[in-house]
Length: 302
Ligand SMILES: CCCCCCCC/C=C\CCCCCCCC(=O)SCCNC(=O)CCNC(=O)[C@H](O)C(C)(C)COP(=O)(O)O
Ligand SMILES: Nc1ncnc2c1ncn2[C@@H]1O[C@H](COP(=O)(O)O)[C@@H](OP(=O)(O)O)[C@H]1O
Image (cartoon, rainbow, N blue to C red; front, side, top):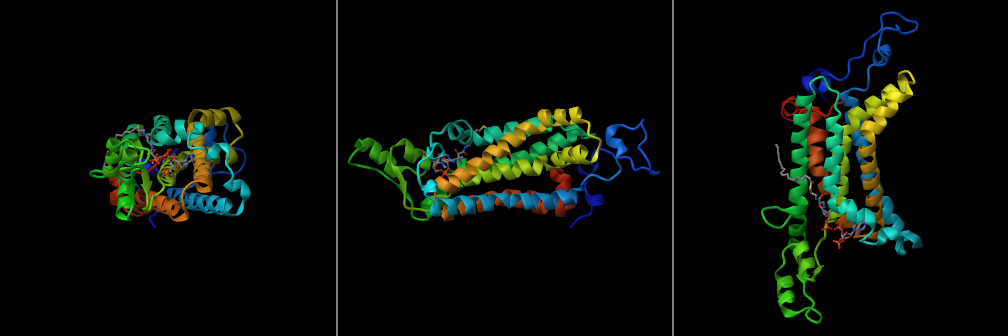
C-alpha cells in the first residue's frame, strides 16, 4: 500500500487545511475550511471506501436474483419488468451518455489548484473506461465481446422461417451480433448471453464512484466536521453532486430490476465480473499501488 507522499502532486494536494497551534476557538480570520484542523480522509482511505462501495453491486445482484426466485412479486409483471419502461429507454439504453454527462459536470467543477491538469488526466481515465465499454458492448474488431462470448458458447441467431420472409430469415441466420439478429427479427438463442445491463450499470457506477468519491468525502467532511454553514454546503450538493448521485441511484435501481426480472444467475454474474476488469486494474490496483501509473493517469481528486 502506498503512502500519501507517493502520490503525484495533482492528486495529493487537496484543499489545504491549516493545523491549529493552540487550543480554544478557531481564529475568526480563517476561512471555514481552514478553521478545522483534522485532515480530510486521505487517498488511502478513499481506496478502502471505494472497495467497500464496490460490494454494493454483487450484493444487489444476489439480492435481486434471490428475490426473483423466492418471491411471487419478483415473478409477477411490474412496470420495471417491461423492456420499454421509460427509465430503460431514456436512461439505461443510452447509459454511457448519461454517465459521461454526470462525469463532465463533476470535472467542470473541480476546485483543485491545478484543475486543467487534473481535468486532462480525468479525461484520459474516462477514455479508458469508454474504451472498455466500447469493447464489451459495441465493437471488438467486429462483434463486441459480449456477442463473441455468446456465439463462442454455442449461441446463434435463430430465424423463424414460419413467420419471417425468407430474405429476412437468411439475414437473421447470418447475424453475428445481437443487434443484427434483433433487426432481422431472429431469436438470439442458445449461448451464454452475458448481461449487457449488469455490465454497463456496474461499470458506469464503479467509474463514477471512483472519480467522484474524493470530492464527495471532502464535502461530507466539511459538512459534518466543519462549521454548519448550510448554504455553501447546499451549493456544493446542488451544484456538483446531485447529477452524479441521481445517476448512481438510478443505475443501482435499474441493476436491481435487471437482477429481479431479467437473465439467468450466471449471465448477471459474468456481466458484473467483466465490469470489474478495467476498474479493478486502474482504480483498485494501478492508481493506489503504482507511482508510475499515477504519473500517467493521475488520481481522482476534489
Ligand atoms: C489512453 C487514452 C485512451 C483513449 C481511448 C479513447 C477511446 C474513446 C474513443 C471514442 C470515444 C467516442 C465515444 C464517445 C461517447 C461519449 C458520449 C456517449 O457516451 S454517446 C453513446 C451513447 N450510447 C450509449 O450510452 C449506449 C449504452 N447502451 C449500451 O451499451 C447497451 O444498450 C447495453 C449494454 C446497456 C445493453 O445492451 P442491449 O443489447 O441489451 O440493449
Ligand atoms: N432493468 C431493466 N429494465 C428493462 N429492461 C431490461 C432491464 N435489464 C435488462 N433489460 C432488457 O433485457 C434484455 C437483455 O438485457 P441485457 O442483455 O442488456 O442485460 C434487453 O432487451 P432488449 O435488447 O430487447 O431491449 C434489455 O433491454
